[in-house]
Image 1 (cartoon, rainbow, N blue to C red):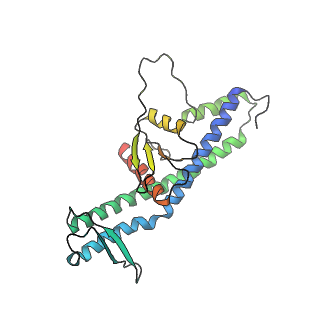
Image 2 (tube, rainbow, N blue to C red):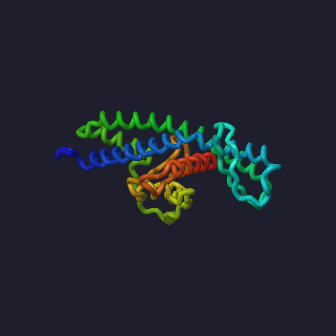
Image 3 (tube, helix red, strand yellow):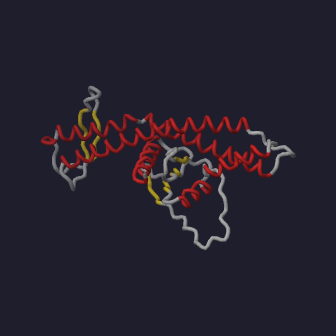
Length: 237
């Protein structure tokens, strides 16, 4: 709670720290859920292997097939087939998606470690902040500006601001995911998104801010958004 002797600048710093902590905790929650679903990534490899193994037994016009899941005796796994491609091409598509998802998962795990470290530092900064120490408040404010937690206004700029038109994607479950294409759009997404929506960004690397338009995304939504975040970072870097 703010007291009377807290300056407006100190109050701004406190609010920025609270917003930053909220975003980091949301990011950790999303990343932890994505890591827990590693089994789904492995299923992509299983599907590719089964399509190759049973290719001679699958009718060419089938768009969906169930085959024995060799990981679990007595269980089957459903596999969608693109009928415009050969079974071997479908299998290679599954292998490609598996490799891409596996790389994405590795990046997500690295991001999770970095996010937890960032959270510990942010909590320590909040706990040690003396709002009556003008010099410390100014130092922390500059740190937050450098980290993008406090936005500064550019005066007398002749350059028109870039319109905020982030890329839009929809998950398999139909949830909107917005991805910033620039620093301006990243800022726009971070400042205007519903605070209850899930937010992702690769820590300590250049890349897009990703906002999941849901306060209760499914595990599959989190998976797909996390892989998208990691993929965009790899391209951007």
